[in-house]
Image 1 (cartoon, rainbow, N blue to C red):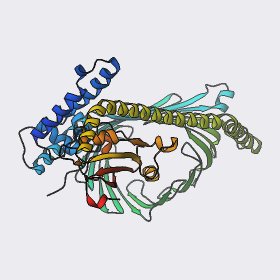
Image 2 (cartoon, rainbow, N blue to C red):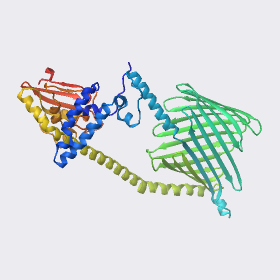
Image 3 (cartoon, helix red, strand yellow):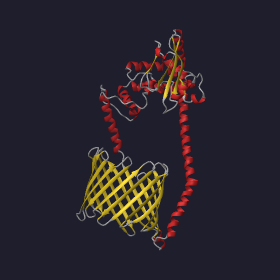
Image 4 (tube, rainbow, N blue to C red):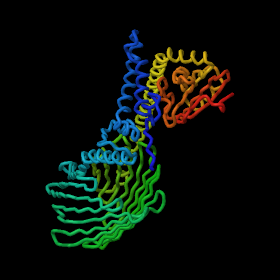
Length: 540
């Protein structure tokens, strides 16, 4: 039988009521009644104690309402609180764990599909071309504009419709086109696309994609022009050559036949690509290299040479927010000298090419590159970088302060809960002392290393105390009338009433020192390990 996945919250509700995950309904009710008697707000007159009791009583009642409801408990056992909060609900009573898991997986997939279908992704770009020479000649500074937009609309888990269009204006001339694409996922390794385009290039096409091996993919396409009836075929193959290098070959047959070979390489700090293309009326080669200076900034150089183009460009980019990046690129080519500014925001893009000169002049080319570059690096060195370093440091400080505040509040809540447990814990302890039974003399829970360091010490210094919690009171409270203490396996101990997690993310340890029949014992267990005392093997 397939094992159940462990919920991420470590079964906190079971820890809160001190129950085994296999506890019966009667055991759940009995545990609830026991804790409800201790934490019921009506038992306390002091306003502060009443508030503490009310808060903890609510936690216990919420835990009971979930664990006493069979359907909710089944969901919690498999997916934890995330499953309950996501709105999963079971139908008829299911007895076998496989049936429960199957239905929950089906319901979860349904929720994910609803979320998927509700999401439409849009992308678009605006390119505004400016020309300084045209402006100096007495004409308008803008020489053209291009706009394009695309919307992806999922219609099912396997089908997506993509609707798009573009508009191009150059001077007094303008063209446009609209397209629609249906993408169908045939399997986990294959898909097919049907496309229709109306406008300057009216055509219909079909394209298939297939993963032919773990490291190779192939794409084939067929396009029919509605203007002249010409047919174009295309094929592409991509191969993973190494961990960070990909090679590709593209072949096109039709009115403009060509073959191209390219490669791409990318790692944490560098990205490079190259391509050579040979066609019936065209020859060209291109390459680019990008260097990532940090997670927020990068530099790029690129070059293209061929029968119709020759240019070189160099630029820099910087991420200014989680979804936004700006780039400034300097270009020298057969059209002249130009700057290009780009703003990328999620799926949207704004590009502003500015033609500075149609003639190549060494002095102009040097100055238009050197002056802005110098200003950029001066701004980066003396203003932007110090600002971002200061902001990152402030964010890290705020994060640490927030975590510290949360831990302080959690520690305060644990101490308050212990204060309510203390009277009953002391009564149980005194009863065990009278019977020469089980008495917890010292119990520490927290950072694995710090607990071990403090196991031989009677005092906790400030460094240790911040990562270790004294849990002697709650463990004495959990000692049964028969003189035993049992903590269940697979349940995170920070969920026990009077406990908290003093070091999130770090391995934790529970140290327990106790006496039984006049002898001393000592044991250490990991966070999720079971514990049963007394045992002779723990004797010091």
